[in-house]
Length: 544
Image 1 (cartoon, rainbow, N blue to C red):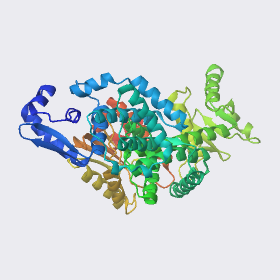
Image 2 (image 1 turned 30 degrees about the horizontal axis):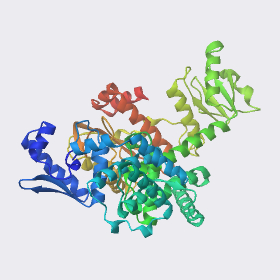
Image 3 (image 1 turned 180 degrees about the vertical axis):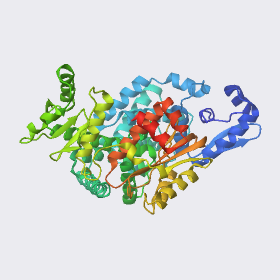
């Protein structure tokens, strides 16, 4: 794909063999796989006797493939000569400066990722235009694009005329204007249009609040951030120009709980406008929701004004503990005491008790969070999460946040198999049959997995349903006797997540646990060798 896309004409199998150091048999085998990939992108592989091989199709689809497999690839092999010489002739620094000036002149806002995407698009545009491979005018009629985007496109075209002595045809200027409209936001858009979009966003946030028991609808900053994001997003959806997301795997792994929300947001957008969002675009939305949760966490921590720490030791260690906690709770006064003196605070109870020794989970209805004597980053993070948990309204049901309580002996399995979807289907059926999950749990899990798989790195998978409606918060464990491959990734241990409505915070803790397993080879290997549930939990507790 990398090589053939860079050829304006035909490339022979002998040339591919020379470039890649692969045999003719391997090349022919890979070309069959290539045809399958091309079909999904509305392209085709043309094989012409005595000439060679070429990729054919709509110019727009060709450029999308070029962006992904040439400019967006990880290959460091020498590219085809034509494109190599072209890259050397382009002054990218000047191109960036011209585009940046054009956007600033028209008061456009753009993210770094979108700006880089526009630069790559311009490189492809110029390269293809020099070979007289143009976009068909009827694909992007000028009448549907606002004139403000043409101002930027024409500015860039003037630079091309002066710099490279050729002018873009009207169809290419329209295509460039479309890309600009799909990746930028301007405050000069019609106020009625902006108000309408903001109203839609607020309605969707209210719907999410009903489904997830959240408070998105009260976050004005979130609504405004989504407004800035949604206007160009709708343009991208309309013209089928969705962005690639270079950090999608990190977002999906670290913010799996937020991805559940942003996925549902995307569903409601699709229901409203008829456009389906890609996994990459949903990843960008997830960043906004992750920011909301971080803001909510900080606001919760700042509301705590008085903390009493129960500990057995005094002197330096107690003072060090106090100083560290004051850094975490910047608005709070932190006082240390002993268990025998706790009644001294009966008349003026603190907002929170922390304890380094085993005590009850509440004192006079004030929660007590158990902490270590010496706080590291992991312990501080745990304290923050438990404070959020205590304020989430779920305290009556779960007194403390203990992830290992989500695992049950009857939901632990070691199996042999090769079909990933069949394996999670069987585990989901067990969870439903035993009363842990709702009747539509299996269907929701499979639907979710078919749309966007949840296989992470190092053989870890964390499938979950489209919505949160568990009967009992639980995680089903399936250990595979031998690793299997699915969607180009290998799987050996599956955590099937089943949570109740409003318990997104648990999803975040599970995600953190999976991250630890991904990074900890020794613990992961011990878990994979666990022959019983008891052995599995014992090893898991060491990690937690």
